[in-house]
Length: 210
Ligand SMILES: C[S@@+](CC[C@H](N)C(=O)[O-])C[C@H]1O[C@@H](n2cnc3c(N)ncnc32)[C@H](O)[C@@H]1O
Image 1 (cartoon, rainbow, N blue to C red):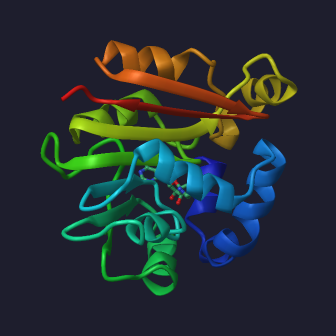
Image 2 (image 1 turned 90 degrees about the horizontal axis):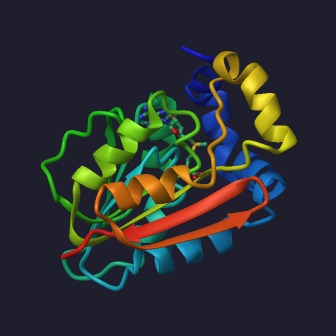
Image 3 (image 1 turned 30 degrees about the horizontal axis):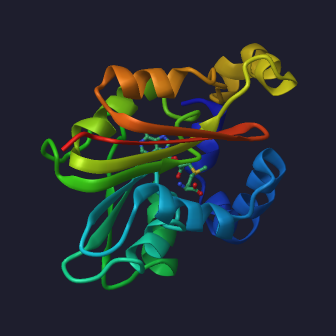
C-alpha cells in the first residue's frame, strides 16, 4: 500500500480530516471552501428530492451527510470508502436518517447497474489505483437520466504535475490531464459534460442519457 493510501487508513487522520485537514489542504489546492464545494455538489448533481445518491470514497462522510439533508421522500445517500477509520468517523460524526455507510473498493462496487440517481467522488480519484476503472464503475451504477460529479487533480504541466511524476508511484498521488475525464465521460456515452478548473483541481460533471 502506498503512502497516500496508508495515510488515509490512520485513525489520526480520520479524526482531524473534516475539521482541519480537508479545509486547509483543499483551500490551498483549489482556493475553495468546503461550504462552496458542498453547495456546488448539490447543484452539479441536481439534487432536489427523492433521489438515491452514492458518494464514492466518502472519507468521514463530510459530503454524504450534507447531500442527504438535501433529499426528501424516499431519498437517501450511501457513502462508500475502503478505510475503516474513515468509516468509523462517518458513523459517529455524520450519521442521519437518510445516510448509510459501507466498506467497499471503488473499483468493484457491490451494486447493480443503474442503482443510483446521482453518483459523486470528491478528492479521491488521484489516490485510487486504476482511477479510470473506478470511474467506469461509477457510470455503471448510475441510472439513466442520472448525474455524476467528480473533483480531482489537474495540471500535468504544473509544478505539482512535474512533482507528482517524480514521486507519484511512491506517494500514490497522481495528476490528470484536463482531457482525461471529459473524454472518458463522452466515450461512455454521457452528455451535458461540464468542466471547471480551480487552481490544481478540476470539477467535472455529466448526465447519463435517459
Ligand atoms: C481525501 S479523502 C476524500 C473524502 C471526501 N470525499 C472529501 O472530498 O473530502 C479520500 C478518501 O478516498 C478513500 N479511498 C481511496 N482509495 C479508495 C478505494 N479504492 N475505494 C474506496 N475508497 C478509497 C480513502 O480511504 C479516503 O477516505
